[in-house]
Length: 238
Ligand code: URA
Image 1 (tube, rainbow, N blue to C red):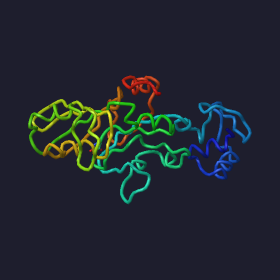
Image 2 (image 1 turned 30 degrees about the vertical axis):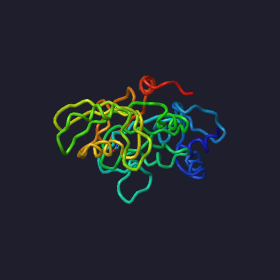
Image 3 (image 1 turned 60 degrees about the vertical axis):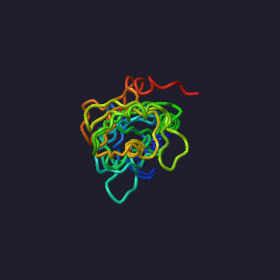
Image 4 (image 1 turned 90 degrees about the horizontal axis):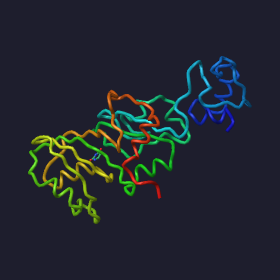
């Protein structure tokens, strides 16, 4: 792909703006030589104003989503893209979230511009386990684990039962829930179905990937080991 289009697709500006960056010699190789429009160069070699480029196409990033941010590009209030470099919102294809977290839910959110990977990670057929830490308004009754694991629970307004989920009781009003699907407001609706209410929800892991010590509001690129861990527990793509 031509350099101008490549940088424009990464959100560095319109083609006209990127051409102006090149003309102003602000786009250089790592060794300092200014790049010109027709030059063939790898992603890793390019510097814009002395800075390495943003993650290359095909990357997956993790964001530690704080409460109060909507999983959307446009919303009246704060959105997850407010936590990322402005260029990320301008990328083509977009670094899109893999599924959604509710505005008041915190924790691990993945974003990728690889549409096929996004689809695969988000698909219930991939059975990718997602781990949620749940705080409840009422004490657990004791029968929730068996019901969630049964594969018979049908949520209000739906026909298909939920696939079995694993509940680990952590305290009277605290639990860890592992789901392999991601229906609308699923965790909150599951606890609603047993007469309870979720007061705090945090996603701590997707597949074998956890937030580690990533601070709320911070993000980082998944490396090869993370990518392997992500899907290690999921069956291979069909
Ligand atoms: N289930 C919910 O109810 N909300 C989320 O944000 C994620 C899973």
